[in-house]
Length: 258
Ligand code: LHQ
Image (cartoon, rainbow, N blue to C red; front, side, top):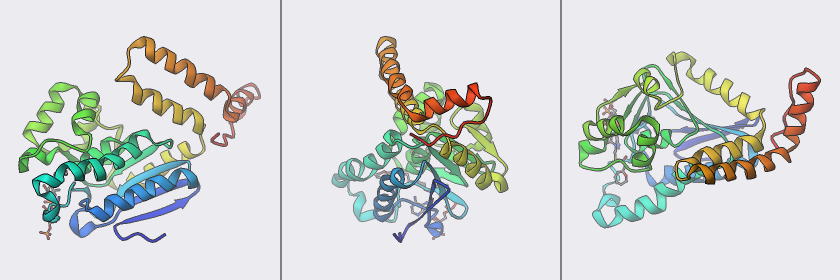
């Protein structure tokens, strides 16, 4: 299926989703949000890992501020609940591991789209900006939820109130993202990680993602119970049997992803 604002391709069980409005710094308009939801929904049927990246020099500048007619006060609740929330939830709750490969500036909702992903790697020249306060808004698209969990309250508050660019190296140092690579190595590193995940134990990945995502709302007792249930499910997977057999036979496992 052809898209207008993103590119979607599947190769070697990796679905690559590329934001593709480079002349608009890949700002999110309604079509892009709809297409992202469509692509993220189909990927689990077609792939075992997802890479989300951008074309051109920005990753994503957040909400398309040119889309003014949709920014009238009364429409914002609707816009967030109906268009941003499904997108963030699909990334956060989806069964596949999602790697964000941040090729340039990630600002506003574009930064928080990235932070919703499971593993975030960034080109050294990339930066993260909670740009909202610059235009009199609060961090949305999950920002107020992700930021304190990733970097703690002090840094979350500083990033949000001061709205200054956080360079990729500092973001990695703070634990906002997983790693930084040279600009020219971003794509190959993203594909290397994705191909490792796409040939890994899919059931275990899905359950690990769910358990880690659930942990911040649970007490230890609840989380231990969740781990027990999830581990019982993982232990039923073919990949678990294969992992154990490969260990005993001293060979590399051949996981099927189920
Ligand atoms: C853009 C944008 C953009 C349109 C650059 N829109 N054109 C908000 C509202 C309501 C409810 C829902 O949620 C949200 C969530 C949000 O995301 S609010 C936050 C929106 N984003 C921002 O405030 C960031 C605005 N952009 C910037 O601060 C800068 O453009 C950044 C730092 C991203 C990049 O700076 P530069 O590399 O210096 O590029 P530039 O500023 O020259 O931008 C290049 C072009 O992209 C330019 O167009 P032009 O025709 O002049 O070349 C910009 O107007 C356009 N652009 N961001 N969000």
